[in-house]
Image (cartoon, rainbow over all chains, first blue to last red; front, side):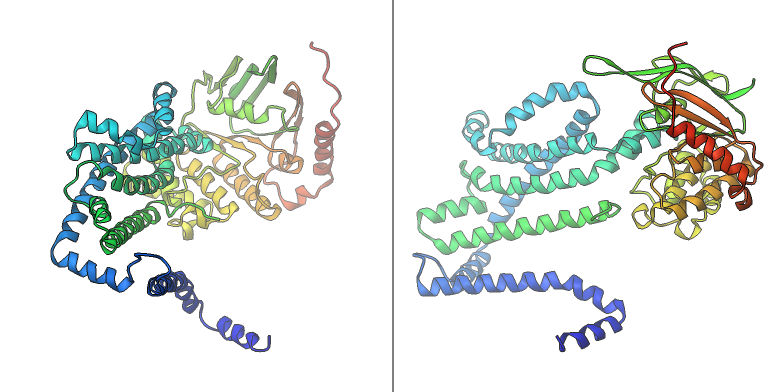
Length: 271
Length: 259
């Protein structure tokens, strides 16, 4: 107790300027520590041979260097990124207007909702056999499945965003003379942006999750394809390199969206 | 009588499960130009519905609501509305909120800037013109909402329990500010409240409503001069009128059988 008191005093005596960045840095420090600890545990488990065939972090790093050098890592990453981007972007671009229309026009909602509720219960992965039959084994079925996954995640949240727009805000705009068009562009769109961005983040996760399975369909390159091929040859280190790449890319993209969210919805009152 | 706002035998009912709920049952009320009228009554007496119909946000089931002799068919910038929940657009700054209505009216940028600036100054928010609503206190938010209504210069102000969510001190401040502006610019004001003191302090006429079904119970004239100084507020006359209103709000005789 006696030790803590002077510490608190000195902290309170300092300008608040100093404490603010420290508290912001703190999660970063803790996060880094957690990652380092995780790698250490992994190295320990691998070294002790507790899990059969588990490669050590060093072996995985070696393999990553090797794959980076011969270009397979870049080709795989680019192929996967292209699929995720195309499918995801297409899904979002379709989902947001559909969600808006559903929220704004009860008739559109009545028509579209049964389809959405129906397809929502089917995991996009379960549609892979169907897409192969319908669309063949090129890029199209992979992108279609990813697109569907992101569409489903995004459409419900943008619909909900429109439905949840505060009634008094709409009334406030109407008494100031807003037409329906103005109401939509100046009130409904900004008010539902937070919902849409949440949907976009969930959709992104769904897109990555679908990617690996989508690459089961006769792919020639891609991170998911590489993993599957490696598993038949028992190349555990290759599997780990692909796995970590997918994880890191997904995390980076999520961070980008989070940044966009902060930018666009910083006006929200939070807790 | 040349009335600015006129409710003519207004009935508003909502369908319930197997019956009908009558929110307003035959309300007639005329409000003269430049008059300040407050409406008090127990919850469920339909006072907010009354205001919503003048604003054009709700339609009467039967009867007519006239503003300036014309039947109200929808909301319009000639009637400024102030809501209890402030209803500021949270993604816009104070200035952008205040300019919202002017922008819709197609006011050119320079003029818009000038008028918004004047409205913001009027409510004393100059220093916060570029702040987002989330950084403002409740009282400041409501001042911003009032500035937003003033900026489009409506002839009628419809205020729906605007100070209901504020602390007592802030409420008195905003009451004074509102009265000062009203004395200068003389808009017609219809002000809904559940606070008897507030109703008497602000109004030239207090309309006391009764619930189930919502109807006008009694209209009390407040024959006190403006400006309503502290002296008036603490005077015996004020207390007398206040007690009259209080009694008719809290000790309402059962509804007379339909006349």
